[in-house]
Image 1 (cartoon, helix red, strand yellow):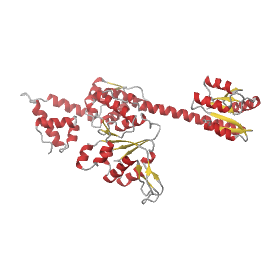
Image 2 (cartoon, one colour):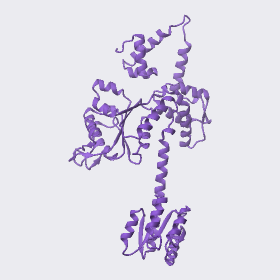
Image 3 (cartoon, helix red, strand yellow):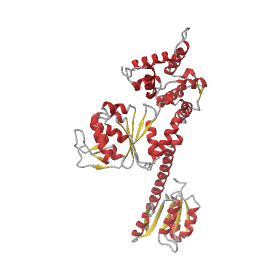
Image 4 (cartoon, one colour):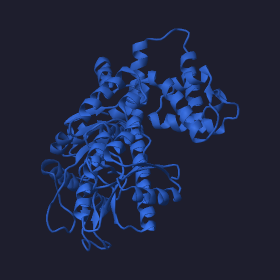
Length: 456
């Protein structure tokens, strides 16, 4: 804070000296100027953290100086000096973006306090801009991990959709990165400076989720001791991410449908409707179309949500992404734990690539962090792998080695394998497809090819 530079612009030399003395005494560097024109040229050279200017000066006055400074640097901090009785002019200057004003004659402690407050706000503004840039970079689609053709296409679609206000439904298994993609859509949209609010529709008890979504008034129910804003109200102007939307109860689906249709929220115990402007991004790991067919999810709500569907493939279907993800998570975990860079053996990486990853990207990241924590050599080797990955590798190895002498018929073996997997998964097609590491469409094709009954 003390290494800040303050520019004083005033045509009154005695006042300039008084200001310079007091501000220097507070520990700041000071540059002075006797005219608006000269002060503007000094500001153009850079390095000025705060400008203090008189309003009444010949030629270029304080108002014009502020206008010129703000055109060069919209976030520039300016404090104006005005004589007692001309406060209206000072207010006009604040409309142009001045931070504050002081009146002559001024109290030296008041002057120091206003200067200190302005510079603190400047630091917060700078930090805020820095954090926004970090967020923008973090959620840039170009920087998201995944270079497989499938993910490249998803990022292209998400980038295009982000520029609109279209409702997006993200489909994918647990751990595939649905929330990360939702954040990317928000922070690459015109709403990026507004709130991004999340709610997990499957994580809250049924008696609480309605209040969490729509809010309530004091006394609306037992325990409602104060007014509460719902997620829709909090997200007004921004984006609301409805995670696990497939878990939402039928009566809440009706209320959600109204919000999507009319942009109107009804608070519990509220007197009247509340208008909101919210973009919806929803996600589910369920086979939502099957839920619609079964009557568990409203068809009209599904079509409202599914304006732009984006399906994220499971990690086992984009194994080309695993090496770059491993490298990223190794670096991230090492930085988090403040440990030196960790490398990985080629054979170990191969086992990670061959693993089925039922928990997807989340499981991969957790395992990498675990291995970094327990590693003592700086190199991740086979012995560092969790037992779940080792045991799968052994099973795969055994299946490939224990072949009968008389040979096999591949089609018959595949048909038997699919039938047993289907039985093991109790006739659930989606679960069977995940178990076999294939898509549901591929499974249905195999059913038709081998004449397998789709229903147990």
